[in-house]
Image: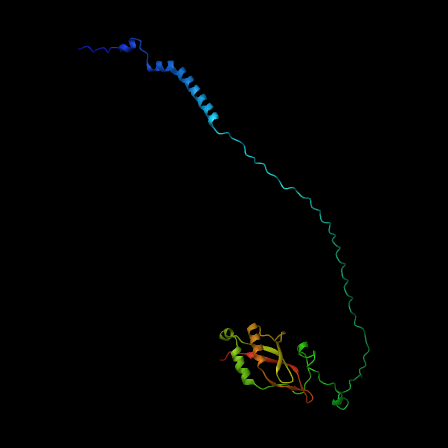
Length: 236
């Protein structure tokens, strides 16, 4: 068998030469103190060369509180006393004579010459007081019915007419001594208004064109209040 060669030991280790680790251990102290001196020098340079800092004034002033006077105490009045209920009415017993009669009214006992004259429509007691009964013997008569019919068809609201909606409006007319409509208004209590504002307004427009032979009371023309129904119907 051939003999294996024995490796030779490093001559440098045997000779006692220093390694890199040994060199580092020997020089750490000089490196440490050198770094400390450099850091101190840098800090001194920063403090010497850095601009001077100053604190800014951040104080503030508050508004002075003002005292206000407390309003006086409001006295609440006591509730009103309860209203006493009215006494229950009692029907009194009365003796009525069964033979009592009312005398008939005749023109012999009340002649026409002694009757009061008709009211004067030119005063403030005329149409300004609103619809009211005024006596008359002959009622006013419409003289332009064809014109009224044309105006009625013209004033019929188109929207209601196309929808087939109609109605009757009862209008109060104040007809003066000349037979002209001096005032007109829709009767508000049922069945005066039609229920449609447009129909009521159209009825007033129709009433404005009406012309009459004036009413008469004891052979004298007189102004009267009359009510006339104005009907809007869709032709079939």
